[in-house]
Image 1 (tube, helix red, strand yellow):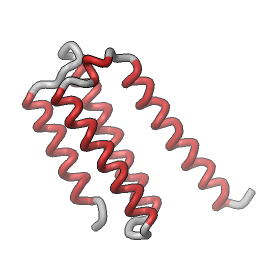
Image 2 (image 1 turned 30 degrees about the horizontal axis):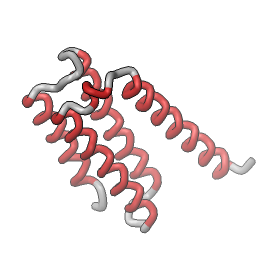
Image 3 (image 1 turned 90 degrees about the vertical axis):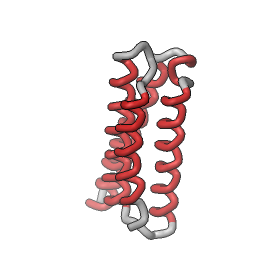
Image 4 (image 1 turned 120 degrees about the vertical axis):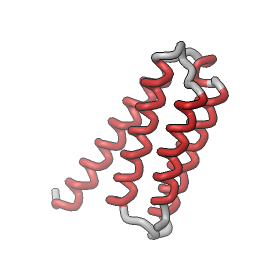
Length: 113
């Protein structure tokens, strides 16, 4: 197996692991908790950013390395949102939402530079 093929396999494995961890976290919560309006808004923005990142790679505007870094930042935001929600019966406060939105804004500005 070539070095490039090995890298692709490693990246695919890492992305699968990130997805698996994220999916497990969501499944551990009740639908009401995930659908809380502030959490739903944060989740919607993260999903939209994931699509934007994918599109930027597809069109060649950013490299796969840049996309990986952006996905990693989004994953950290998602983990932080889950941690915040776990401390407040599945909800996030307005201040927590503001904090997460500021972090998402930073990542959003990095997409397509």
